[in-house]
Length: 562
Image 1 (tube, rainbow, N blue to C red):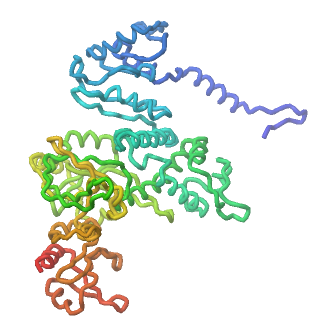
Image 2 (image 1 turned 90 degrees about the vertical axis):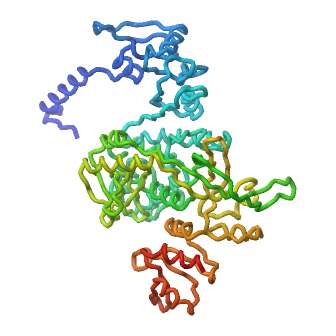
Image 3 (image 1 turned 60 degrees about the vertical axis):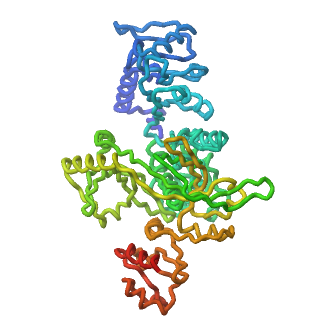
């Protein structure tokens, strides 16, 4: 509030005036902020960068440090493109104006066949233009495929723009061959789309957590004041029509950056919880997933249905596939580890396997509880673990020398090993029978081998095969093997027994721990099941039969033999 003396004249603070003058002096001494294009030219030099844009003039820095205005024409851009394709200039910068009708890929006809690393610096709002730009470096008749690198900053509000690109890339891919990767090229994770159904559900939970005072980033009154959004009525009750996600995202952009980051961290944790649950349940919509295998051969072909009008058929194929691991080298994993301060080299005390532990995005429950996770990067696969579960696991820290030796050993073992397994896929005319297929795994897969053979359809797990055949009245003596049943139980799917009596083996949560339970076993068979190693407990006046965790393989094998 202004301060005045007895004569009505304003009173000035000398210290504040001095600080203001010092700040202005410092700001005026700082160099101007350059655009990305001018920054590239200044850093690498015009002799190393080929510029393919629509501007006719540009400021360049001479060897003496002075700047001069340089004119450009259509012939100039043609010469710049030719210099890049010939390898005389190793860096290329192009805009929408320079990305139409041109090719910058590692063509087999060009002297410069180095792999392109394409940085998407300013993706813009239009997905079709983003795809058109990415297609300049990814074309047929090329020596190698490019690496696409979308560039963002640590300001979480910028996710508003990348989310729009992710959503529109998904929509664009859905219109081309029905294959989602055609549009997005797998640049974005499903959690990056902030306008998906998972994000909308997460936002509703975020609103309720905010109104209940369970968020740490901001309070309800402060959020309503800053954003101008009204979430409660005069009685303090949450309104029925909450703001849509587009409006909420736009209002978040007006907040200070530190507050944006805090709000987005909580919001992304809620999204990650939903995406992870959908991925574990097999209901995550990721479009058509391509599974590359070394060899694939059809060993059984069962016709499920023949359309009475068109004569088109639906088949259940049994395919034996061989897959080859593509392990991550030690040098590459060390390069990844260099980006993180919070990392750990782990070794499994039981199996002797190693993993690089890195921080991962946490998940938030609908009650506001945050659950921290870590990512275990292994030579052949990655997995997420809860921080609380790591303390009870066999993973323990190890030294660098032990980690390096074990990692190289795993890479050498995986490089020469082919994994053989049998899968079943429903293919052919699927739309009329879509509702009859299992509900717990909705992904559509394309199996492709090295010879170019491919099969498109829905993966059917072994425990669902008997029910599927029964629905279509197909006679079969199919029985899943003991190994297939154990794999299904490990994945959380129940297994139905039809021999020696109808029953179900499933995972059950009892007293906070997971157990394997046999449901529906006849009472007269209890002594026989106990002889196999099973045990019983009376819970809520009901006898329940459980299989010891360390004896699941042996007990299932005995049941299959009957």
